Image (cartoon, rainbow, N blue to C red):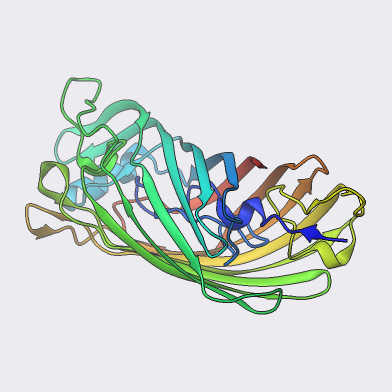
Length: 339
């Protein structure tokens, strides 16, 4: 009896907005391997597709007007928002069993952006929203079978987002506050997994090299990496490393065992480093930083191939420079389908 394995949807596409220090999100990964940001080395089988929707709501720590004014008087351009929202749609295609390509287009919203201005108090820029920069990524899996997996990632961020949004008083916003950056940014990375009977351990890393974009601004480079541990409930444990956390399951020929609904519980520990940005060749010393977070979550995988996932991300350590507020928490929701 022949059984055809359909690679996991999450192996092809995890449409998450990676946690970010600055207003622009870090590079996106595809193929979450049991976590919400950490992705697996698995790929789609040749000729198969995957689509998905991913929404991330980030709540930063709130700084008072007096704090922002004090930083501005100290020659630090500090800002705050009430919240940041990133909603992404994407598609992935299996070129072959080893190679999967994907495209992701985000929509971003920054609610009630305000910034301290030296000697002038607080500038209320209003809410900034629009289509962001598209990510094109390719993943090549180097290993075979169901054991240890390893894959290499490469891609580029395209300048598809607007860079001409204006504040409430008509002034053009700085590039870091725009929906897009105006830059072409290379992305490289890798992923590895160690599957067990019902448990899977996954690690991944992505690095984005920022180039010069709009208004002679070069945003800081970014590195994000993490490990995730997941456990499958409610399905045959042997299916764990073929099913995906985003919802694709085994595809059986007639006469094979039927598919079953299942649940994944997972927890990830991840972190991000962001370099300082440059404007007109001058380094903004108060920009960039680093932080680490823990993200427990759950995922439902339906027998029909759909899935839904949610995770709550909490910082466990952060050292973010004064131009940006610390992160309080992030809530991430996703919906996916492979076919």
